[in-house]
Length: 255
Image (cartoon, rainbow, N blue to C red):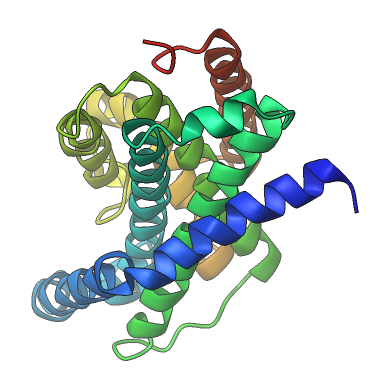
């Protein structure tokens, strides 16, 4: 077993232990929040809307709500964990060790992916209390949720690197990530929008993650599936390289 793999495994296990140790903060709140979404939007509002995209409204919003949970929790895990390591100054021990920067980055991202997919699985199980879903394309569903978790874990890492105080780790999720998620086709089909707003929505990267996952679950999508995966993979590569560059330069770490 190589030293690099041991380092990666150690960071990921540390992150998993952290997630499970504070499960009341990491796993329970998303389940409760999504249950309320299913009750309010799915049951009460959905009964008046009827169908959307050829599916019951409840069925239509399930993939969006699962993906929203994955995105928010993958992002939150990395931004809080890495900033905490900066604040506690124990990240310096990793940086002065012979562990390659890409292993350090992969370890934190791995923790974000675990939390994102774990919460996504919980929300999917909760959805079964309200609807009977059959997965149309399981591998596409798994690949899309994995790529989304990696992508937004990397985005959370960028936020953590630049954050100087605890308030800074909540600004992006509150003012950027949450609005983009709500406008990413979680609760509606972009085909219903006027042409101008449809084109605006197509500039939102979250739209592609939601629709790729929705295709995996329902077999329906508002965007080209190949384009959706190309955007997710391309954005992931760009962010990974950018994050490595930040680590190599010591941005936000050597002040």
